[in-house]
Length: 463
Image (tube, rainbow, N blue to C red; front, side, top):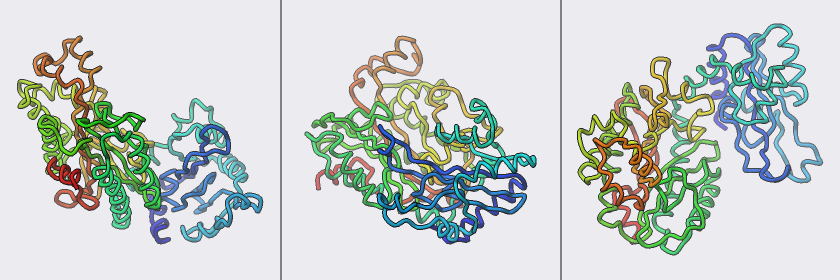
């Protein structure tokens, strides 16, 4: 945990913003895989963790009564019978003391407490639940019809939390550096040790072990595939062959719950083919151009469009596209090859605070999230501020299904040379991703640098 003062100050800031009412933070419960007692790895709700520092313990509620000044943790200490299975367990009162509050009550008292306060006319602020169990619990605790729980979320609370969490403190940046460096180890190992004849899952399994051995675990399911044209293609039993491109997108979270997220693309053999290197360098140029544009006051949407233009220019040089690059991007022609967003916020969530709503996290009342293909997948569009932490991850994806559909629709005919694109339907995909903190005048790479030029990657491949 951070020092006690960190959590006290975070809660005080939140109370000063909301001014009245009750703030209810449900912690996460265990989630079963295929029967009740076989659980997925536990991950605490990030807002609960942010304001309490209490991780690894399921089935808790934290409540702040702004009007009375009460801060209460509702939960149960482990019973002797439960300790048969889990061993010694630190008491909740100990965690409360470390977090800077003193009141702990049994879990079964949360309902009666809320009922009493609701009868007095107090408003209960809660965040939009992202798990079914949370949604049902809030419905029952606050006597709200299940289908109205989402509509009754507290926008005021969402906005207050986004304003706090989007700018990372110096102590948070230390944790993020650690998470990114664990992530870097995963990628370096993959680049050096992946071999033709190996299955995707063989390498993904090893990378999972590196993440866990770092003290936390996987920040998200590993994407490791020779079919990188599909954006979220997780590792399978497919065999990696000489000539394949391997796209590896993976990340680890550390003991404090902060995450890293990186991508590298490398050959399954020792070297890129000349064509693979040409396409790789187009992506790398877009990546470097985007990084150079990172600074406070610049809209990330504009940086996304800049990277898109660089991709178009490179594809034009390669003969796959034609015409004016700005006009091509304005028409959305680049989305035939770049279907997603340039990056996203990162912190306690790998897509930081995404459960609170992308419009609140990545956009503003003046800048609305687009509904257009491609742009609708841009999770961050608003002006950057100092201490934002985000990813930059342009890519080129030659998806044969999309190519066939767009050609049949006769879309982008003024900008795409479909006869040339046909030759790339088995090419795959390339993505390069790194993590940055926005500084006073620009940006700073998080973590130790990792090979990203084609030459540097080939050097690692040939170690």
